[in-house]
Length: 251
Figure (cartoon, rainbow, N blue to C red):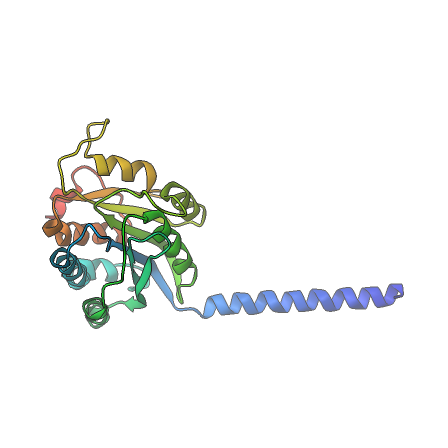
């Protein structure tokens, strides 16, 4: 190929690459903007009996319909968020139970709430939290919206102990991707950690949470889950960093 031919070929390749870049940019710009992409990753492991699981499910369905939660959603620049639900338990077996839905008003919240209540419980065994976090990272990558912020919201009553991708590694992947990971520790016993906090709080602070403003919130029992989740979602949606007095202020 002569010199002129090389110039023509190079120009054609540059034009092709430029066209592909413009197509990718246009595709990203064509996605509907949302203030937040939020994945709720909830415990469906064998430690939760059917009555406790139903209580948890109803708590999630009620939280998205709470007026304070809806007010927080409407306070954002885009007045809406994208939200999905994942259940965790078995190694490599975390399941997307409700795929991405957009919530910007009470009707959207009611649709998400109904989808949660009608979804069958996934089949899970025990405590592979890291694998669920890993699934949630991919789910956020596939979000059919253009989010300003990305958050994985973990809840559980036990540490990760059987994951193919351990929770610290999954957490680091999330942070590297610009995702904040928060946690809700459900305290079913009085175990305390070496630092003087509840054992599960210390584990989640060390191994699970990460990213900008990441925090652990607690529920004293499974029955306390709905209250704690509602407060946690308000903080996450409003991009508020949790402090020692936040739970009291939100009561």
